[in-house]
Length: 369
Ligand code: GDP
Figure 1 (cartoon, protein in one colour):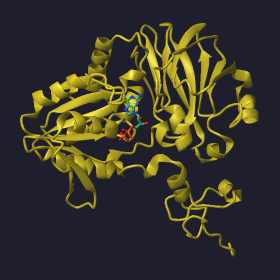
Figure 2: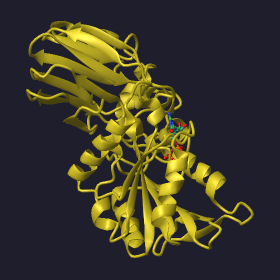
Figure 3: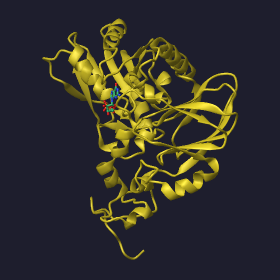
Figure 4: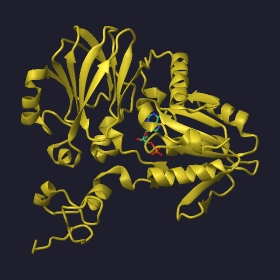
C-alpha cells in the first residue's frame, strides 16, 4: 500500500490487517466518511469507555489479591444473563472469604414469578458452577426491591471486615453501590481511593461507620455477552427496563424466529410445540419458514430485521451456528448471553440451531421459570 489514510478521530495511520494493533479498521468501514479507527469508533459509539474495566487475566489477579485479605465478597450477577455474568475463577480466587451472591435485576422477571423458586434455581446453578455462596439474595438495585435483605445479609456475614463488590460490566454494580452508599455508609466521611499494588487502578473505597470499607472493584468485560458487542444504541434495546412480556410461539419443525439481525433461532426437528422467548420487548421477532430464512436475512438484514442497523451490523462479529439438542423428559431453557433465553415448553425434546455473533455464549440449562 503506497497511500496512507489517517483516522479522522485520533490521527493514527489506519490499517486493516491486525485487529489488536493501533489504527485497525475493518476494511468494509474504509468507505465510511469520515474514516475512524475501530478504537475511536468504540469510544464514540460503544459502552467500552464507561467506567473502569479489566480483562479476564487482570481481573483474576485482582481477585487473587482480594483472596489474600480477610473480607466479605459480594458478587453481583444479572438474572437476565445469569450464565454470562458469572465470574469464572471466582470460587478458586476468593480464597476462604465468604461469597454472597447478589442476583440483580429481578424487576425484569414477569410479575407472576415465584421468587423462592428462583432462589433455589440460583443455588443449584451456582453449585453446578462450583461456587459456594453463603447466601443468595435477589434484588433490584434500580427499583429498590429486596434491599433490606441485602443489608441484613451483609451485616450477618461481615463481622467488621471490608466488603469487596465484584461483578461483570452492566450487571448494575454502580447502581447497587450507590444504593449501598445511601443506605449503609457514613455519609459524612469522604470517599477515598487507593491503588491495587502493581496496577495503576484507582479503587473507590466507601467508608462504613465502623472503620471498614465497601470496596468497588473494576467491572470485568466478558466478550461472550451480546451486550458487550453491540453499540450503545442497541444496548439500550437489548437490556429491558421493565418486566419482560414473554413471547410464546407455537412452532412446527423447520420454522425460524429472528430477533432483529442479532440472533436467529431455528426449530430444526421435533414435534409441534411451544417456545417462550424471554427477550427485551424492544427487539422485534420475525417468524418465517426455515427454507426462507437465509433469503429473508440477505434481503432484510439491518432494515426490517433490526436492530442492529446496517452500519452497526458490519461491526458485529459474523454469526456462528450452534446446534443444540434439547433432551427429553424435562423443561429446559436455551440461554443466549445478553439477549435472554428461550424456554422449550414441551418435554418431547427438540433439535435447534442458534445463529449468534461469534463468541456469544449459548447454553442449555434447567428452566428458570
Ligand atoms: P455496572 O456496569 O455493573 O456498574 O452497571 P450499571 O449500574 O451502570 O447498570 C448497567 C445498566 O443496568 C444500566 O442501564 C442500569 O440502569 C441497569 N440496571 C442496574 N440495576 C438494574 C436493576 O435492578 N434492574 C434493571 N432493570 N436494570 C438495572
